[in-house]
Image 1: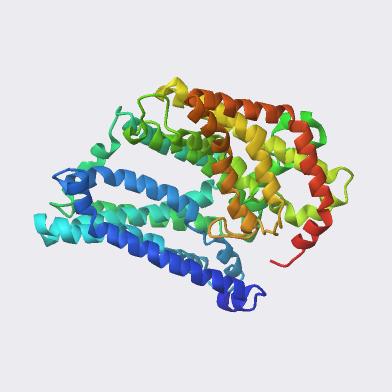
Image 2: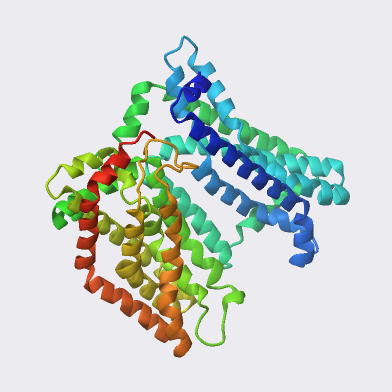
Amino acid sequence: MELLKRMRSSSFAKSLAIGVVVFIIGFFLLAYLFLFGLVLNRLVTEILGIPDAVHFINSCLLYFFMLELIYRYFIQQLPVFSLENFLHLPLSKSRIIHFLLGSSFISPLNSISLLIFGPFAVVEIQQAYGLFAATTWLVAVVLTSWSIHWFILWFKQRFEDSLTGTLSVFSALLLGIGLSYFGFFDLGAFFEPVFTFALESPVPVILLLTVLILSYFLCFAYYRQNAYLEELSEGEHLQFANRDLGFLSKFGLAGEVANLEWKLILRHKKSRTYLTLCLVFLLYGLIFYNNPAYQTETGFSSAFIFVGTFITGIFMTQYGQLFLSWNSPAFDFYVHQRNGLRALVHGKYLLFIGISLMCFVLSLPYVYFGWHILLIHTATFLFNMGITMHLVIFLALWKPKPMDLNKSSVFNYEGMGLSQFLIIIPLLAAPYAVFLPFAYWFNDYVGLIALGATGAFGLIIFPRISSLMAEKVIEMKYEIASAFRQEL
C-alpha cells in the first residue's frame, strides 16, 4: 500500500532521484565507517601513541553512545505516520505495533556500531584475547546500540513535543561531556569495566540483552497505549497551542507575527530541529578554543572569528536561509493583509535578533578560555546583527521555494535552492573581509574593533535596511506567491 501511494504521487520521479542520490551517499558513508573500523587499532596505537587500544576504546565507548543518542535523535524516524494508515484495518493492535517497530529496526543506523567495532574486534581483540572474547565484546557493544534505538523511539514519541523533556536529556549529556572535558569526572572510565568484563564473561551480554528486551517492550507498551487516531492528531496540533512569548506583543503587529513564528518553530519537526541544533552547536568552541593547534604567541587565531560568527549566528543562518519558505502555505494570507508582508519581515527580524541574543548570552561561559574570547563573541554578534543578517535575508529572497512543514526534518530538501546553499558565503567571507585587513595592518584586536564597529553601524541604520528588505518582499510578492503555489 505504501509503495503504491508513493508511485502514484506526482513527485514520484523527483523522490526517486533524491532517493538514489541519498542511497549512494549513504553507501559511501557506511563504507568509510567500515574502513575507519579497519584502521581503528592503528589510529589508537600509532597516531595517538596509546599501547593498549582495547582499554582505550572501552573507556571511550560511553562517548560514542552519547554521540549515537544525539544523531539518532535528529535522524531516526518515528513510525507514527504509518500507524495512522493501519489502525482502521481489522488487525489486532499488538500485531500492528510489532510490525511497525520491527520495520523501524531495518535502518542503516543500526549497522553503524557493527561496521565500526566489528573490524576492530576481529583485528585487535581476537588476536589478543581470542574468538570468544571478541564475540562477547562485540555483541555487548551492538546490544547497547540497539537498546538506544528503542529508547529513542520511545523518547521522541513521549517527549518530542516537550521542550522540558528534550532540554533535560540534552543538558544531562552536555553536563556529562563537560565534566569529562574539564577533568572533574571521567564518565568513560566509570563505565569502562562493563565492556572490559565482557572480554572475560558473557554476563554483560546477558544483562545488556535484558536491557534491550525491556527497552523494546517499553517502546511497545507506550505505542500500544497511545495508538488512537484522535490522540495522534491531538498531540501534533494542540500541544503548543498556548505556548508563546508574551513580551513580543509589545512590538506591535510585528511582535504578534514573531509570536506566531515562534509557535511555528515549536510545532513542526524541521523548524524545531534547527532550534535544537542551535543549542548543540554552542559547544562548537570547545573544538577550537583550547586546542593547541590554534594557539598563537600574540593575539589569537583568525579561525576564532569563524567560530564566534558560527556560535552567535547559527540559528539566523540556518533558519533564515528558508526565510519565506516557512510561510509558503499561508503566504497569500499575508499578501492580502494591510501591512501583512511588512509585519512578517519585521517579525522575523525580531525573532532572529532574540534567538541570536540568547545564543550570545549562553556563550558567555567561554570567557573561561580568556577575555579575548568574550571580545570575539561580542564583535561577531554585533556584526551578525548589523550586517550578516541582512545578507542572509537578501540571498534567501532569490527564487524561494515552497515547503511542506509536516514532512520529515531529515534529508528533506524542500525549500532549498541554489541561493540557500550559497548563504554560507556571507557567513564565511563577510566577517573576514572586515577583520583581516585591519588585523594585517595593525593587530588582531584592532581587527576586532573594526568588526564590532561595522556591526554597530549596521545596527544604527538597521531600521532603514530592514524597511528596504520589507519593500523588496512587497515588490516581489506576486512572483513569490506564484512560486509557492507550485505543487511540491
